[in-house]
Length: 148
Image (cartoon, rainbow, N blue to C red; front, top):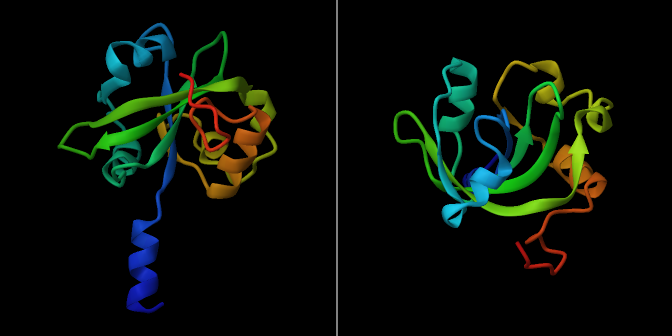
């Protein structure tokens, strides 16, 4: 890989999934107050490694965990990189239809399924695109819908 290809790879935006218990921090909480929050409190070293690797503009699925409903409900973007214990994320848009964990069971290479205890996991481009298809995209995506 040449220098140019390495630079292009570095500039390529990454995608992640951030888990939260809705009783602790819900999508409604995230969208309040301008939609910006400090994503902190991550103790697991592997999950922290993923947070540290995030760059400005990276997109993340916002995933509600817990016993009642395990599903992707929205998308946030990284607006401030790792500062020693957190990143800041901003709400981009709600999924047009939440995507339940059961609908993702066939994604064999998805870290959400391989490492279910992690609160932050990378999302490969192909899986990101398939999840967006399952959920009909999200408000604010490239489908021309700019509503919140």
